[in-house]
Length: 336
Image 1 (cartoon, rainbow, N blue to C red):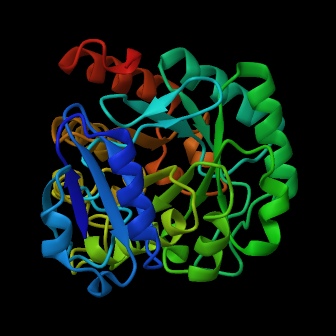
Image 2 (cartoon, rainbow, N blue to C red):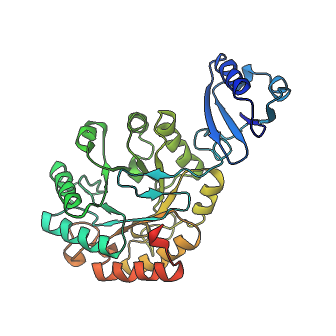
């Protein structure tokens, strides 16, 4: 349920209303817009008489929210959420950011070289896998805690914030200095992990599951938001369909639809979506055209020798070309 207050409500009356509602055991999420204040009521709202609230002097309207996701719902939070990192980088609400780097951290030389190149080309964050979920148990699983150490070393050299994937709760202490914690597609519905991340104060990058609906995706975000962590970034990375020409099917329609359904920023990962390096650029341009708040792009200094996902990784030169094209179609995009 949402309660829309009239413009410039009396502060005392508003506070009395909020305290009265809380007396029913409900949580309240307050959203302050340019003209109206919206109170989002979360809990069993059947205990409240809608007509009684609607009759109050400071109340303009009362509406029920039918969707099961409350905190993630745009009806509860009309303004776009902007996730801001410690270095001032912003994502969402008109702010665009590219996260770029190798699928997997392989060495200090590799990660630092790539970090320098992607920063020079306009990337705002360095992405890199330390823990790698792989379909085959025989594939490279990542450098694990050593990989995080190397990412932090690259951050020290370049100043780029880092984003890397967590696999399980036992690893959380290792992510103390990580700027953005990524939850991968396979863990999108790892609810125990999501609950714990909801108790942290770090931005969470939540990738869409391989075959999950938008509502299921938002319900996973709801776990983090309900825990008190409002810094959630959604990432569309392609879904599993019957098509085999690409690794996955990139659902660009999800971007405007998520913006309609939710206030959370949403970025696109064209690398995992297609699995083909030459397709990354056109899909990235398409993502910008439909309103994505950012991109996550895999960049490797030597893709043919990459230990993980070399086929979908751009060279630093190809990444330079991508960012130049983005700047050409939307001047100032990389400065937002």
